[in-house]
Image (cartoon, rainbow, N blue to C red; front, side, top):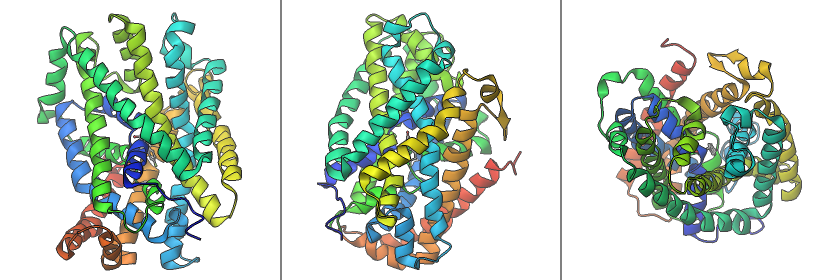
Length: 445
Ligand code: PFF
């Protein structure tokens, strides 16, 4: 059976694919705007602490769960607790969250594609004018879903891995180019200062919690994406090294995105706390006043599209793996069915950027707009809940001893290393995540 199931061709292929999942709009669009809103350097430091203390140990839990069973999130839990176990719902939540996140993430990714060509087809329109036109946003959204389905159809090795292998290095090089351009703009220094000189006087508990939420989202944690990607790893793979590489690359790209955006924003006299529109509103202005601005803009949005695609592929893959493993559907049937369903679920998000007044202005839990509400429900609440359940499952239900045996396969990790990891996964991660959830539900307001 394992033979019929896909497997990564090499550990480099896995690392690139998993890093491709992690690196996406979360790094390049969400990280800079959240950092900009939360004071810059101090937030960056908190974010790095969250990655190291919470996300990295939790990442190993997801990878170990996936490789143990070679299954999707639902199958992985069934393999340990049996079919009727209520813990299976923790895996099912991940599969549902995959559709939830993909439904609006692909909308933003569609805008990204649009912005590659915007200077040429609609230079007079601003962000709202462009994304608020359903004749623009819906076809772009559909296109992105089709692109994602296309890659997932190729399967694990030929589709996902090959795409990631080519695209990831290209992404790195393109980012470096934009960073160098931004850093050489007059006035860029103020941006560097904002990003690197911490001012902790503005930090509240809410800032800490925002940093943690951003770290989960960015590392693709809490919905079983890393369970699924881990499930395609052979027993000989070194989970510790691979996981550490993935976290390192993801964090590197987020930090680089900050270097790409803040110097440029300050050089332009723009505001770092412009919010979710930061990338889409501020940067095109920055590009427009730069020599070869059209080219820089195109390069940037191509880069963002690449990053988004390797992430949407992992979101879809979680759901497809469930239907392939558990429902015995073909990869083709699974990918197209989930793609169409996601498109339908995402239509209100695509219309909420100005095309439909009621969707644009609806509010729920303090968030405005259908897309913002979806991001909050799936990208925030659901990920935190999923990570809480899965860390308890691995740390307490499956147990550190059993999980540790799996973690040790293929790596040189010692018993005391496993014990240390156990402390993080049993106590630190669940407690901190629980506090995040309380905050999400407004207990601290
Ligand atoms: N990590 C992706 C990003 O930073 O854009 C988003 C994401 C992908 C979240 C896959 C969750 C996931 F399972």
